[in-house]
Image (cartoon, rainbow, N blue to C red; front, side, top):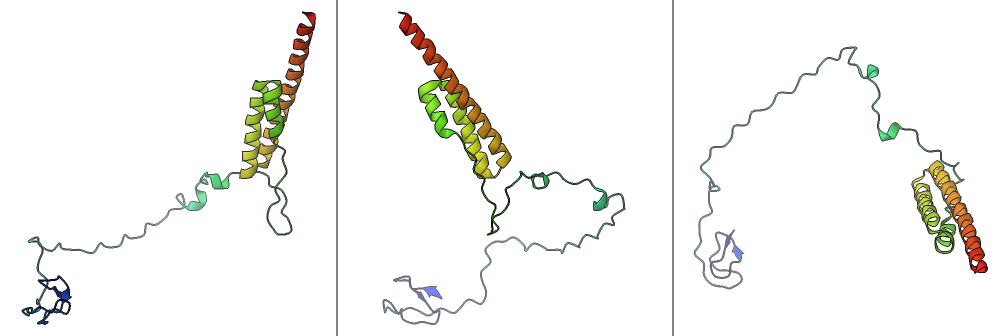
Length: 166
């Protein structure tokens, strides 16, 4: 196939008229071979012989090597027992997020912020499946929240006594 010199439609080498524009075309003989694009010689390809298998001695055997430590063979966190469908049951771990917000705005801001940080950690660990870590972070969040409530009440009592004395 070659392009028509007038409309660039591909036509057969033996065609005398273009099928699209209808103009006469001089037929050209079909090329016998593809033209060579460069003058470089063709590279010589030699097959690579296969590598002979190396014999293993008893000292280098895989049975005697220490196991490779990866994240796959580390002990996994304890998961809850599965349900009837076979999926693991999600434990309900209270994150104490609402307590953290209340402590932050009404009682003592530093304790409330610590409560919010630990409640976020508890939620994240619960979603990942680290139930033991979620329970520990939840306990820490509860502890910071309780301390914040106590600090807030003590602060309000001190402020009440100061205001009454004036």
